Length: 142
Picture 1 (cartoon, rainbow, N blue to C red):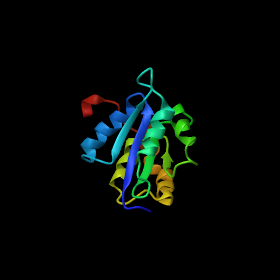
Picture 2 (picture 1 turned 120 degrees about the horizontal axis):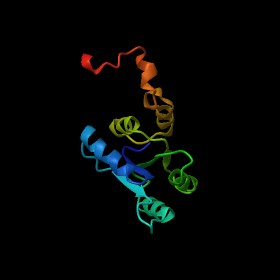
Picture 3 (picture 1 turned 90 degrees about the vertical axis):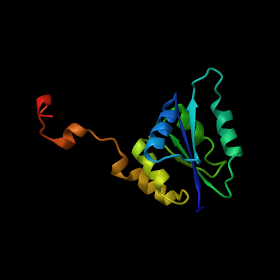
């Protein structure tokens, strides 16, 4: 495990930039955070983008965590192809709560820690109506 980590958020469209915008408000400036907005231009080449990220990363001194938006999506599948070639960690179905926790956790990106975080229910999707139970929709009470 290394002392530092770089996090790259790669998504379809501009979602990655939205995550970074929200993270700057919640966590502050993060020099080791990068967004990759895929397919926003006709000439976008995912393989070329991935190779550029990998070839410009210092794997000896810094862990690399790639966070994608959707399991089975083209962005995530694009990174899966490079798992055997480069030593990076790949997380998918990324959400803001997970990213805040990942960025605020000191140290590198230990695969056991990432695996535990990925299984943590805190970061999963919740149907709030069922969690709240009985509630009154009368806005006059607010």
